[in-house]
Amino acid sequence: MTDHDFLTKAFRGDADAVNLILLLSRVSHVWDDLVDLDKPVDEITINRTFYALLIDLPSNPFFRRHMDTLLPLMAMGAMNYEIANAYELSGDRERLALAHVLRYSVADVATATALLIGGPEWVRMIGPELRQLSQKDTLDHYRSEHSDHGYELETSEYLAQGLLLFQATPLGETDQAASDALLGYAQIAPGATVIDMGCGVAGLQRTTSVADLHFKNVTNCQAQVTEIGRVGLQAVFADFADTGLPGAQADAVIFCESFGYGKTDALLAETFRLLKPGGRCVIKDVIPTVGANPSILRSWGYRPTSPTTMIDAAFRAGLELVQLVTPKTYPAKWRDVMAKSAQFQALHDCINGAGKSCVYIFQKGATP
Image (cartoon, rainbow, N blue to C red):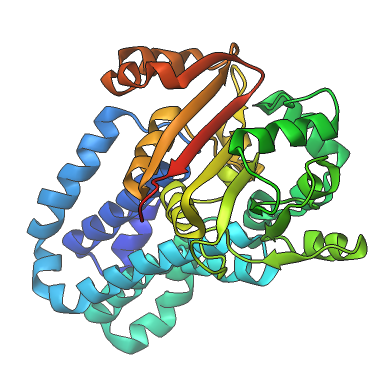
């Protein structure tokens, strides 16, 4: 039985109700693809989706009759989807279980539709199957896509696959040289406070030769907190976009191949809050290799950010671009966008295309 046939049965032949739920399903999938960037969404699909939202949805007769009941449920479904995405970033097993249910809570609209049509006894009969129809993904599969176990333990499988998916050339021949180079972009002085955002096992603090720095290591992985504690250092267990650390205290905020584990605007807003006036943010990002499958990239939990997206978001957050260092192996698509962008032509003096990897250096203005 097709989804359309089952919904026709669940809604007792009400074609308008069936069309409404199928429309919401299509919109939800496109929304998710646009947010996750795991599937390409073509222009035709985007245009049709927005037309459906602007025209088809408000003109649907069933929706018009029951808007007062359905609209709050749709609003809660949208909010729960955003909450589920926040839970995804944690990698926490319990939060992932909650996220798996929350991201499909727009299905409550389908249950409410059956209730409006057939009453509570009808929902008690048809509801379990109706709900299962909406929850397409299994919990085990969902956890396999979003668990951070591969990242936190750095398994051989992760390392082997990661090298195939990402261009992430170190900034130096040794760990110490790479760490010193990364901190060099921040131009910090002895006594400076450095926030290592997505610190891993505190590799930056443990390997740099730069003396007299005060590190605050931030991670959203409990296994890394434990490992850092074993070597006598400290870490803050927190969401990168909401660290809880005092504002305007950091001379530098560093993201070393960790920026893609969060939402661009939220991370840069938190970075701006944490930096002192004149402080710098250094982001060593990884970029997809030629032919890398976006869905596979997402399965490792990392979302590479294009230069236009990164710089636009930094500008909105109040950060100024000091320099963008790009490798010669930069994706051709990104190079084309940069070549055609008036913004990047204006930033020409800030861009160095002969680097070993992709590094952004931003600065918070001297005045708050």
